[in-house]
Amino acid sequence: MLTAARERTLALVADLQPAQWLGPPLDIVNPPLWEFGHLGWFEEFWCLRGGSRRTASRLDRADHLYDSAQVAHPQRWSLPLPDPEATRRYLEQVRQRVIVALESDPGGGYFGELSALHEEMHAEAFAYARQTLAYAQPQPLTMPVSGGPWPGDAEVQGGRFRLGAEPGGGFVFDNEKFAHEVDIRDFRMSRAPVSNAQFIEFVEAGGYRRKAWWSEAGWRWREASAAQAPRYWQRVGGGWQWRCHDRIEPLLPHHPAMHVNWYEAEAWCRWAGRRLPTEAEWEYAASSEPGDPGRKRRYPWGDGLPGAGQANLFAVVGGTLPVDACAAGDSAWGLRQMIGNVWEWTADWFQPYPGYLRDPYAEYSEPWFANHKVLRGGCHATRDTLIRNTWRNFYTPERNDVFAGFRTCAL
Image 1: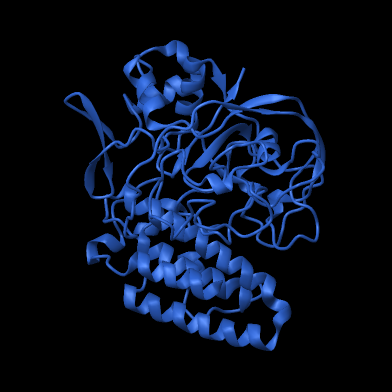
Image 2 (image 1 turned 90 degrees about the vertical axis):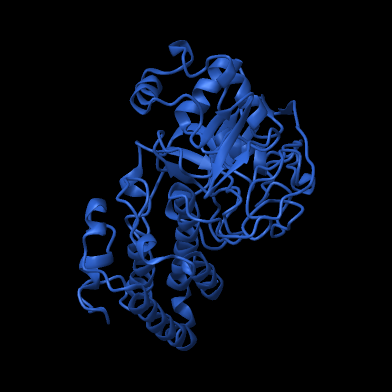
């Protein structure tokens, strides 16, 4: 896992030009050079220093450069960071020592796995940062020739359900701990995420001009941002295009709407007479089986690791697929693409589960409770070893730079 994550990281930074290693100061991305070094610091801190700042780093002043809990975001562009080659050497030296440590003490595997998953999450962040900064596509794109809509709702019969991860099921993060019983009422959920074609209808119906479709907070965001359509969209003549990294491309009608924030998803729902699913409904629809709500799958299709025919995750196509793709990955209720393609916003604020206890990596979940919204399911840039039905992602509701879309439920 560590090796695979590092190979991906190196591929994502291999073509960066000198000016691209820092890029412009933005609230929503890190300087790539800082983020690159942070990966080495994190791995060294947990795997070699035991999570203690009393133990010295092999890199002078590393804690003052790369500790994300201590270094304020705006400062990361003005730090005396080592150059890319020196940073690469630091990562290599740390990795060599970590491998030796893991071989001599297999019991240290928890922090090795934490570091690998942390690097995979940052690799996804590198991928959407390259989109934000209009850098070239990081992965060759092999798109399918055709695809279509996947309309309609699935009827989901409710029941008593254990939301969250069960103990003893392998590595999970603290915000997934632990499964607890909730009651789910019957509901109807769309069989696929909302498509570009469906979102275009909202835009062309004046959705961004009518306050009635927006919450108060959402309308404040829309006015402050002057948004008239989703991020990166542009109308050209009678059609729609979007900026995909450093290129302008036609907006594909049957691909999922992406780079929409929570406010936009909420407004679309009000316009369409729909609603976002709760987090519990989403996990129930992805995990449970008709007639046996107590049975819980790791993935929508079962317990086997994702394959290309089941989910569009990292290394499949390098971009989104049409919403009718990946039929082999349907949930027991007939819901498609609940894993992969785009992250899906849910209605809920990110909150701890009952009995929450933070893990050693204290900054992962706890600072973000109550002011972030929950997303589920992963996207086309998510590694298959990272995702599962219980995985909880979280972003503030105005974020539209990540690879996020949404599916809906009937009122």
